[in-house]
Image 1 (tube, helix red, strand yellow):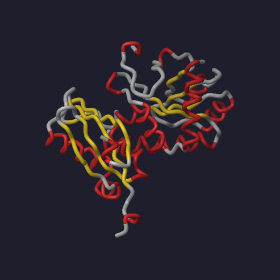
Image 2 (cartoon, chains in turn cyan, green):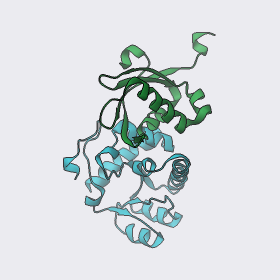
Image 3 (spheres, chains in turn purple, red):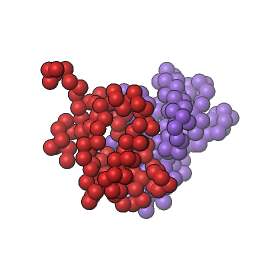
Length: 146
Length: 104
């Protein structure tokens, strides 16, 4: 699918999440524990509730938590506020456990794709510092290529 | 008021489309105002120093003003637009500048 999509401005390449071996969509704590066994795992939870133990393990294995723009886009009004709040809480927990984090679109349709500037703004709104944002870009590049 | 005491401004150029085509100026103004009001609320819009400066119906390009420290929030707000009145809508930020002349 990614081959057919027009690449948004400022992005080097598009990588469909399903094609990444280290990407895991986690639904509960048990699936999270299985997912982090892989080195450099990319974890995404649509509920943005990940246990501290999982974050510690993920940090030890060089993985990262993903924040998806699509999750924000699919919500409206008060629900959008709640999902942003949950993302900020998870970011703070990940930062405390020295676990990696990054932003992505996880777009299922072409209209859900966003350009690099919009993803940077998304990261800034979540609370990424400039250093963390650059680190997240570098880490994302490394883990996607892995 | 001294110029240095006024709020610091940034201008963000954007590309607007509703249902794949640029909306007419009245629709564009309504869309932008409704979307920003919904995202920031009345208090947020006032502190944002938000203003729709111009909009060109021919190519769908427009310009909004915001407060310097809140450029990222403004761009994020633009990116959050996906639908308007049942049609697919997109407000894509193009450039950010400190002056209107350089932004357009």
